[in-house]
Image 1 (cartoon, rainbow, N blue to C red):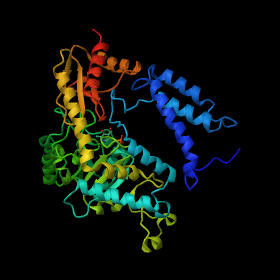
Image 2 (image 1 turned 90 degrees about the vertical axis):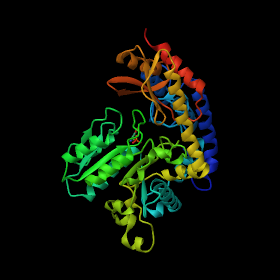
Image 3 (image 1 turned 135 degrees about the vertical axis):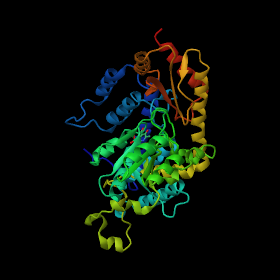
Image 4 (image 1 turned 135 degrees about the horizontal axis):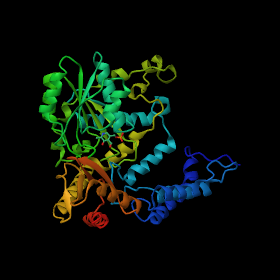
Length: 459
Ligand SMILES: Cc1ncc(COP(=O)(O)O)c(C=O)c1O
């Protein structure tokens, strides 16, 4: 067997061209054959189709690229829940921009690893440009803001908690709204912190008065408060300035999980909703949600670079003191990971190509779509709207259905391959959740979605 060609080097592009043609062709035919946002038929049908395309996965003698790449890309695409379909709207699962996916291809080809400069000269320089830019966007008035790249909101929240733990005598207590992402209490468990203090959020957001009450009970203990700018369930934004005041009065650190809502910063019309964000000691951002990036595109921003000091770490083969003294950038303290993909690259290309106004326009588009959907539901005779959307998430339910029927509508639409909708509990009831992240969605798509829900509700 000939040695398979490599992706990089001067010969790489010629080796890649026919393979990419096969990939693009299978992406096209796979989407056509799927015919909807998810594949119809549920897990058994999809698993069977994948098995047929992939078996045996490790043959004694390989099939060669033609029989592996095209058929498997086709199976992957035909069986995808494709967020580029307007009716795939369950989760904070963004349809990536073509531009960002193209940029990510270059990252895969060159495969720089961000754990040492000698594996990533340009990629690390670009990562530094990106983190500086995003840190400044988050903290416009800070003297030395900084940011790190993460695998997503979960890792950013974990790091925020770790950095807070390292700044205080143990044990650190985490206080968070009941509306906070599950990764926060899980991070406390991972880091060996005491059981967290969830503050009930009956209105959907963290109430400053209730926070004050909880912090009063923790007087004398080091505390990190985690607020949310864009909750997973409804996109609600906690009242950041008032929460920052309460934290300051109690000497508590403040972290804001803006994994969803952070990109409002790009929108002139909507950035006021994040007023007070820059009073947080750390902020989670995540451009694989409202930033249209392929996974992963998480960020942890900190108001002062010194906050990252606990991550400093030396491994002689990666960042020896003499190399650092000689001027080679020390990258190991920029993450807990060692080998790291150049996720900064696709984000840098996107930020430069679209600019603040281009990204802001996309944010406005999906938030306006959510407002349109809310209007349609409000005027619909058979549907109930939970609340006006703060971001791009809309909760609704068939008015006369019980919770089991609401759950069944979601599963039937999924099983039939008609739509991917999410679910959320609020006010003691189960709601359907439409998380609108696709800027190409049209009002007519929203009408189709509502018609499907109405048509699948048991009478
Ligand atoms: C508010 C919030 N924070 C954090 C996360 C976790 O992000 P990731 O899935 O990228 O780790 C999510 C995920 O939906 C989220 O909604």
